[in-house]
Amino acid sequence: VKKFFWATDSYNFAELPKSEDSVAPAAQAVEGPFFGEPDRLLGVSVEGLNLTELERLSATVRAIDQDTAVVPRGAFVLNDHNKLVPSFSFQGLSFDEATQLACYQHFRPPASVTRLRALATNEVEFHHNCLDPIEKDLPKGCWS
Image 1 (cartoon, rainbow, N blue to C red):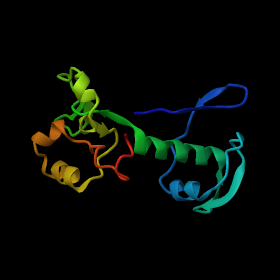
Image 2: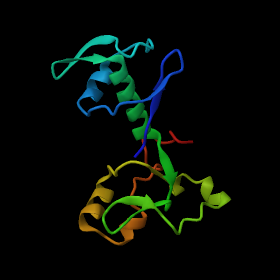
Image 3: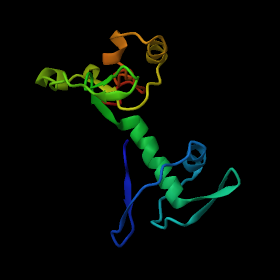
């Protein structure tokens, strides 16, 4: 489980609260800079509650992580209980592999139809290649 932290202007660190999925669209709709005031109300309502700057920050950090966290292909596998775990057989990438986009995957639950179908059918081959590849991300070339 990933953890993220935020700090006040006096450098007191606290764990960033996990944002609810319902907050994401409202957080993305807010324009302008962050002010560094976690309790500041942003004038945007989510399910009848006013969105705070801390909730916006949490949703923004998680959205960035969703799109940018990557791992080398084969570093994680699905175990028999369909849990993503580090692969004991992964020895790292060679220099040549490390320079190829095809050797990296998103570190998030799969979103591609191909990966979701394989997960549903419990294909053995899928257990080593269970995450979405980054090489097919749009716009093309965004990782280069």
